[in-house]
View 1 (cartoon, rainbow, N blue to C red):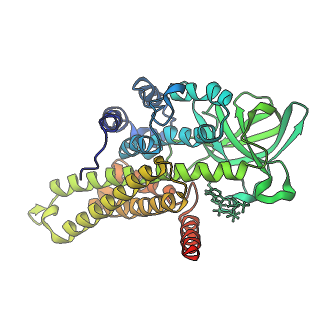
View 2 (view 1 turned 135 degrees about the horizontal axis):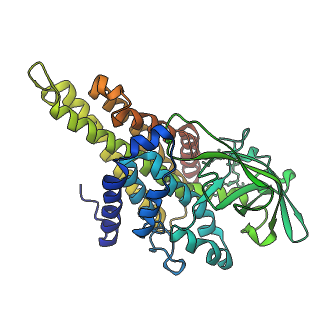
View 3 (view 1 turned 90 degrees about the horizontal axis):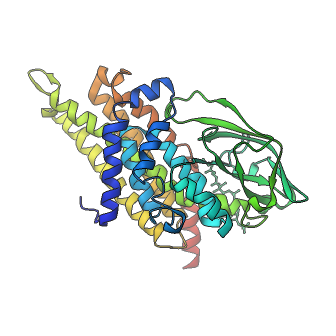
Amino acid sequence: MNYFLTEEQEMIKELAARIADEKIAPVALEYDHEGKFPHDIMQYLAQSDLCGVYIEEKYGGLGGGVFEMALVVEELSRACGGIALAFAGTGLGAFPIILFGSEDQKQKYLPDIASGKKLAAFGLTEADAGSDAAGIRTTAVLDGDSYVLNGTKQWITNGGEADIYTVVACTNRSKGARGFSAFIVEKGTPGFSFGKKEDKMGIRASCTRELIFEDCRIPKENLLAREGMGFIVAMKTLDRTRPGVAAQALGIATGAFNAALKYSRERVQFGQTISSFQAVQHMLADMAIQIEASRCLVYQTCRHVDSGAKDISKESAMAKVMASDTAMKVTVDAVQIMGGYGYMREYPVEKMMRDAKITQIYEGTNQIQRNVIALELIKQASKV
Ligand code: COS
């Protein structure tokens, strides 16, 4: 299918594809089994100028947007959804600064992210605040020229590996969702430490840790936007990064499909390759249909978001649901086509099936996405 990418987008996609095939695919299983963080792959991305594809040129990026970020995430995820997350998680941490940072904050933080010198992370989730993002308990209290942070963020992608954290905390509990504020916190700030590295089902090359704030004093200038804007910062960020999760799911699905197709043309049973059996052919056809339909929605959603459209929550949620449900279905079917080999840890599809699962869960479960979609549909209908 011709997606009419610009010359620059084609170049970005090809560069990312080359890194995926030459650098990631050969080590994906090792990194997964050992839970190894991909510092070396991030170096390759940095050398190829891909770390800043979604950052404005004046801050050292390539000047693209959500679409360019998604193209990189998709290609990397084809080889390993976990390794791709070091890049995508940095995007999630960077978007609050891109969207709401002051000129000084952008000048200070974005060039290092764009060059790949520093990784970023986003801290919203807490033990008792997952889907209910407004349930966060971490506090930030203004004291002179500093905010003092106390609380613990849970399951933070790139936790411990990132240098720059955008964190949402409560500055006025009585105001509910309007009582939150977002901050930039640098690694190494006294009172800021990390919990244990989580042992996960999938995306094991990605590092997931707690962020612990104990009387952590950060300069007042590290407030993003204004006090009380933290929930909006989080929601508007997620509206722009959920297509990235969709792209990750799309990449994982594509990787699994490619492996299953290749295997079906090599595996001989009853004297013929299993690709000659209609039962297998129909599975392959269904997988391809779902992947292509997801790609159409993900790419068009990215374009819609990058166009500056105001209403993007519904489309962004739709892309995430569609692509992540597809990734789960396609990876399960890839394991089925590959049978006993598919189930073994020395073949890649077992890992892809484990990696796919998180895309239905993080950055808002698919149940939450369906809530967002339905509420938006009802809101739009009531305007007619
Ligand atoms: N863009 C701009 N503003 C938004 C918004 C969006 N996408 N979504 C909500 N808001 C605004 C609302 O308009 C409302 O503003 P007012 O106070 O002016 O009315 C405010 O934010 C609160 O919104 P709402 O009442 O809808 O908040 P809820 O507590 O009901 O939560 C959901 C809404 C469930 C959508 C939100 O909590 C959510 O996205 N949860 C999932 C969180 C998530 O993705 N976690 C993963 C962590 S990051 S890996």
